[in-house]
Amino acid sequence: MARLIYRPLFGATALSLALLLVLVSESRASEHQAAVPATCAADFAIPEGWFYTQTGGEGAGFAVWDDADAGFWTAFQDLGGIPVVGYPISQRFRQHGFTVQAFQKLVLQWDPGARRANAANTLDNMHQAGLDPWLQSFRQVPPHQALPEDAGQPFDVITANHLALLDANADIRAEFLSVPNWLTRFGLPIAYQDFGAVRVVRAQRVVLQQWTTDTPWARAGEVIFANSGDMAREAGLFPDSAVTPAPPPTALATDLEVTLDQSPSAQGATVLIQLSSGRPDVRLRMDGRALPLACADGTWHALVGMAAAEEPGPRQLQLEVGGQTSVHEFQVASGTFTSAVLTVDDELAHLLNPQTAAEERAFVQQLVNHVSGPPRWTGSFGNPSIGTATSPYGQRRVFHPGAIPYVHEGSDVAAPLGTLVAAPAAGRVAWAGPLAIRGNSVVVDHGFGVFSAVVHLDRIDVAAGEPVTGGQPLGTVGSTGRSTGPHLHWEVHVNGVAVDPTVWTWRDFADIRNGTGFWLPGDPSGAPLPPEVPPAGESGRPPEDVPAG
Image: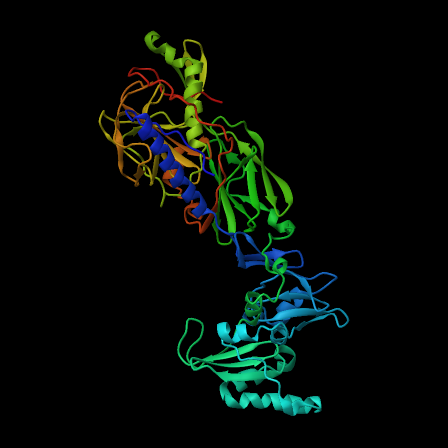
């Protein structure tokens, strides 16, 4: 269930604001639901076998494996795998005294004495269950035909009698007999019928079809094997518990591997993480926070931001896959940053009040902690304004009076008053309005937990909740809030951490933005946003920095 997110619009009535909150919440709920795939990899290895979601969905499916009780995985491969047997459509279950597993085209039963899997007489079993009328009406399969001439005859004569049924269709006969072990694979032909649109041979274990016109599944005249296992499942031949998809079993050790694109990772870096698994039951956490995941090439990927004030040394990622957990340690290296000592005019020194800074940080932090949906950006970010780069990201500052330490969490561009400020990339406006330290500000949600912020604006041209495209005007350069003069301060936040924004102007993180599916966590804290917006800023001369920590 989506949490209501407070996105104030100045001048809105209580009623209109309430309606806005509901609409934004519903929009984000639908975005979130649409973003969650059944799984990243449709099928993947498990201990002594394989797991398939193609006939399951929602991250669940059916496992095929070998153990002391049965060797269905080996049998499945020996028979030809998916092209011949089809995907699994059931768990293991007991039927007629055998351990059985159903597949789309065949049902296999385990012979413990011979230690092998045999094709079950699925069509015979359906006949005995009284399902011939259903087969004929809904699947155009002729009813079971008993041949009187079989009575009292040896098996070779009975075989010849049933093979004679194939004489009615030379194409089906050739396809049927082209398999050397046709008797053990298909059983005996039982009936033939021309339904007009399709000609059908029913055997003990399979159904062969020849369609007279082109269909989505066969060309005119082509002979194919129908999904007799699917027919049996749809007709109710198997217990419900057996055909109910389940989560994948225990993961392999190799599913717990993690690769970082930067090791060590410098302060301010945006780190791309690749997992070795595409299973649906993967969760990656850092500091207890679940990270959003993007599927690319069958495995999950994630982003982690390193703060400018990140303590150098070891950090840990916690990975959970299929009931197993692992901890991956990586190193954070010190970045190279400039330093500055600044003095604030007495009349604006109150803006260095720690409480004011803490309230604004908490408000912005709640905004950028949110994961609203999949990535919205389509390439590397653009610079939001044209000008001269001044104070860089990560600059260590000390403010007087008070010798107050600060870390610069954005990048500054000096530009004339009124210079256009544009969205660095496509997204949706998460906040637009005045703040005490940042002044007139716009925060853009780019999806996947990535946000950008442009602050100290003179004019704001967008409203909260509004979609924006890359390069779309957001406002103009100003000197509102704690600012020494007209300039733009802009930030990029990755999963709640302010990172070096310039990296995003030359890296597009294609594995994330081109993801074919996404797993998105809810709000990491569950705490509501502050009920009131921090006090609006004043025009003036103090610097724009955000306190460290």
